[in-house]
Length: 114
Picture (cartoon, rainbow, N blue to C red):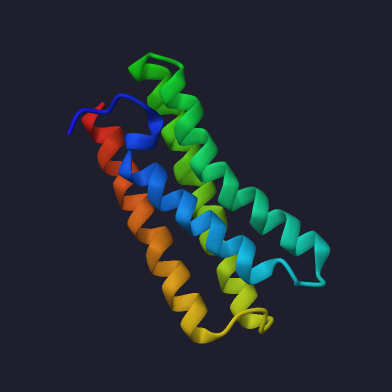
């Protein structure tokens, strides 16, 4: 598949879906600081993929993919806390964690390909 826009990147599409799910699950969380931080981490993954792609250079794209991967790690870290604080169920945690791990692996593959 030829990538013509960042929307063609599977990792971007998956990170968008994960971001939407994070927003749905945590939108009523009363721990506003936690909620805002997990929202920022989730949206950072997809936005850094998009921004890096739009830079039109593999070196810059690669750097932004590393940032996206870091944000994916931050998101996973926050999911651990969310579970411990009972902000989410074990089932939600397992699903979100697996999705974030999959995205991180995809980002690693893209980085290697560049």
